[in-house]
Every structure is written in structure tokens, then in C-alpha cells.
Length: 491
RNA sequence: GGCGCAUUCGUCUAGCGGUUAGGACACCGCCCUCUCAAGGCGGAAACGGGGGUUCGACUCCCCCAUGCGCUACCA
Image 1 (tube, rainbow, N blue to C red):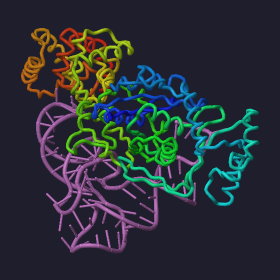
Image 2: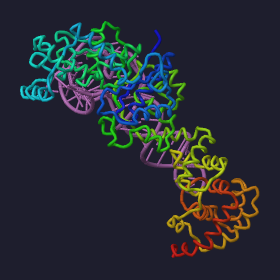
Image 3: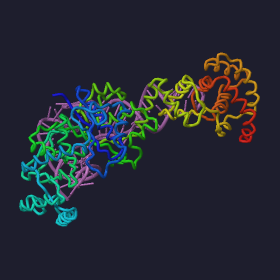
Image 4: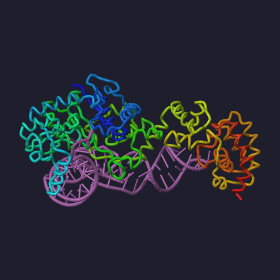
């Protein structure tokens, strides 16, 4: 039987990196085995559904390059792939359970349930639906049950959990997990609004969509035995289960927005590369070899092994993500980077530059920043003349002879042709040596004048990118306009 | 409280009875150098505790501790 896996998010928010990793592991597993990767939307909670969430989930996964074989947006033979469109199926299936005595009706109000739990808490016992003390098919005469149902009284269907035996399953990552029936609650399967709960819908859909492997978060371990019970009651073969370790905040709490960005869209907006984010997230809980960090999607697919996924939760380390993104920044082709940088520069109101200028600018600075947008900020001087100067830096390298040297340098630069880093270095070195000065006597002031900053790429390389005209313009401007201020600062 | 899952450097991890416990990020130092990076070299840094099993435990078993998850007509 060929592998079929699904990513089954509930549209209660935007895709976060925990969801991304779950989707990725499902994808890697499917592709590794030549199977199908399916998207199913679990929108059984009407109140928590967030508009736009489905679109965001699909968009973000497409952005990182995870395409589905089946799903609400692409169709497929086992649709619909949205649970709110499958209500009739669940209703039919729940009747099978009812007939077989595997489930029962319950008529308790929320208030009654609350009182039950309070009673249990006071008695110091675990809060759990008390099948024999509440109003349901077990306690009510069957005529009364029929009457309530005919009346249209609010009713739910609950799973009749056997209380006298263990329920076990073999997790691909964790091995055998066993829970006793008495520790399981009589889970609601069908809510009074006619919607199924996660447990029912999930099992029914996984069956009818022929899912072979359920790869999901660790938070589902405690309810898996209930799912096993459902498969048993239906007489269906259960899929294989693999529960992934959780992703945590730096303080070890469950991943949340409070500790910074968790939405995939946040990372996209900040200029992280999809390849880097995917690579980073892939290595949270699993790694193909201990001696490498960078992998292409194809390599991840080839190496993926579900049984080697870690069992312990992993903390999301931003510093490592930054490092990984920086690796990709140096690896990715310049023309792609330039095209991506272009709109960012526009947003900042910088003038338009030809693609090849952008490529040279990126080549100049890509080893000095982690993310592409930083080239527009860290390297703003490549796109507009300095708007301010680091006067402290200037003061540190100020010489009284500087104005004169600069005047004398102008014609030298004018005659430097071609205006390359190599020739510039040669010319300027010669220039300072003639005056018995070290190279740094001019390098630092020039850097300040041309970039406004004390840090950046090599001066000669920077000059070559800026071009002769721009360099001359900036030096002249400095001499005429900024120098009086500069001298004030050195006083 | 109950049930479950987990526990190797600060972080991500390798390890699958015998290793000087390896790598990566971050950190520190040195080198390179026009600054800042990058790069090179080096450093510090871990098997939660206690019992077993074994000739021998990071590796297997048990207990404890700690962390996390679940305990809804949420998923």
C-alpha cells in the first residue's frame, strides 16, 4: 500500500513554525516513500475559526516549496478536504457507533457538567465524565432518550470507553504506549451543534482518505488511545502513528507569540529565505548526519527517516536561524537576490538601480549581514549619499592635512581608469606613500566621507561599486558642505 | 490531583555496552586585515540523581527529581 500522509491544521491562526515543521516532516516522509501529501482543514470549531487562516497556511507552505498532492485548493479523489463540508459523513458514521454500543447520547447541560467537575475536584478525584451519574443513554429509560431526541433537546454523542482494559499503540518514534481505559474520558464525538469533535472527524477522515501514517504533534499522544478505540469500533485498520516532539520557547514553555516571532509570515517579512527556514526547522528534532548543517530539500527527502526523529522537545534558537540564513545569503544566485532586493529598495524610497548594480552591491555586502533586507540598511550608502556621518570615527582619524590631501586626491581619482578596486588600491597606496603616510591615514577618512560609517566592505571594493562619478561627487560635497561641521567636531 | 511523554555542552544534536563523549550555533582568545564581517587556528562547555543488570554503562531495567503535554460540546 502506498504511503499517504496528511497535514491537518485547524484554521485558528496563521501558520507558525511548529506547524511548518509538522507539515515538513509529513512532506519529507511522503516524498521519501513516493507517497501522497494531503492537506485537510479541520474547521470543526466554528467559534475559533479565523478568517484568512486557510489561505495563509496554503500560501506559506507554497512559499517554502511544500506543494500538496490533494487538498481543498487542488482537489483530489477523496474530497472535500474541509471538515465543515463533510458533516453528513460524520453523522452517518456516528450512527454506526451508536448502533454498536460504542457510543451513547448524553443530554447534560454545560452547567450540569461544571457541577460534576466541581464535585469531583472537591472529592479529590480526576475530573472525568461520570457515565452513571449524568443524564444519558445509560441512566435514562430508552423512552426518555427517544423523547428528548424527538424533542430536539440539545444532545451530544459520547464515546463509551471500556473501563476494564489497557489500550495500546505502537508509536513509530516512541515505541509502545499504553493507557488504561479508566484514565480515559468518555470523549464527546458529536457536539450538540451537529459538528464532530476533532477525535471523530480525524479518525473518520483518515480512514476514508486512506491515510497510512499519522504524523502529528506530541500533544496528541494522550488522545490517541481514544482514536484507537474508534478504529476498533468501526472495524477499521488504524494507521501508523508518529508523534513529533514539541517546539519550545527559549524558556522551555510551549512555543508562543509572546517570546517573539513564531508565524512563518513574520520570518518571510523579515527577509529570511524559505530554504533557510526549512533547513533550520528540519533540523529541529532530527538530523541526517552529525557533520553537516546545510541540506537542500532533495537531500532532506532522500535522508528522511521518521524513526530517527528525536523524542525530546526542541527550543527554537534564533541565533542559529540567523546563521543559517546567512549561509544561504552567500549561496543563493545574485540575480535572484537582486530581484528580491529591488522592491525593498523601492519601499525605502531609494532611486531605481539596474539589476547588475544591485548584484554588485549584494556581492559586496552579503558576507557582512544575515538577511537580505539588511543590505538596504547596513549598506544604505550604496543607494543614496550618506545622510549623516559617524563623527566619532572621523575625529579618531582626523589630520589637519586631510582637506589638502583630499583636494589633491580628486584629480588622481579622476584619472583612475578603469575604476576598479585593484587600480584604486594601487593609486591610493602610491598617493599616501608619496606623502610618507600609511594607507590607513586616508582609508578611514575616505570611508567616512563615502559611506558615513565606520564599518563596511573593503574601501576600494566599495569605491568601485559606487563608481567614479559618485565617489568624486561625495568627496566634493564633503569638502564644500560637511567639512566646516567636521572641523567643528574635531575642535 | 490523575494520566502520559521526555531528560548528552547555554542551544540544536551524534552516540545505539568498551569513544580522549564527536559536530554545529552562540561565547572567549589568536591569526589574517583599511574598518566591520567572512575565513583559519585554538579554548571553555554536557551524559539530572540513586539503585540495579553486566567483566564493563551515556547506552539496558527500576525508582526519584525536574520539565513539558493532556486532563473542554478547542484542536
